[in-house]
Length: 151
Image 1 (cartoon, one colour):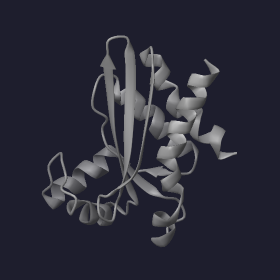
Image 2 (spheres, one colour; image 1 turned 45 degrees about the vertical axis):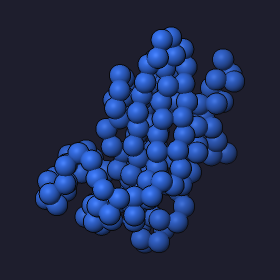
Image 3 (cartoon, rainbow, N blue to C red; image 1 turned 60 degrees about the vertical axis):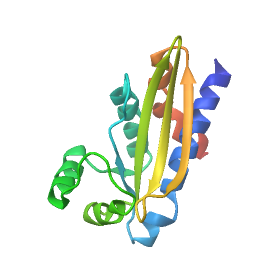
Image 4 (cartoon, helix red, strand yellow; image 1 turned 30 degrees about the vertical axis):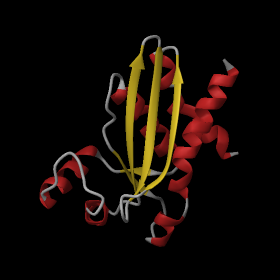
């Protein structure tokens, strides 16, 4: 059990670590602003909410879904973006990164994967994945992972 929690915590840390460095500072912002896109798959919204809560608890400003949707409409973008579209959307939202996630269930195993994309060009900055035998294992990932590894 302890090994699974540590593994989950390491995964979250690798996802959020790029958010606490240069892009937000370079833009002159006190806290990084990120877009956490909707997570696909079963229980994706539950995992997304847990990650958003953990990010916000650790000083990362998560841009509201409605604000992101309004900016996409204003700029004429649909659900998926081309790499060159990220810069314009990020500028409109004052975002430093985009997070994309996917949750899967295969037989008796649940897994989740998150990618961090650079807001300047849509290039992948990092990714992380974690899993467990139950969906509840994934919900707990975003609750304490960042703070445990912050020390």
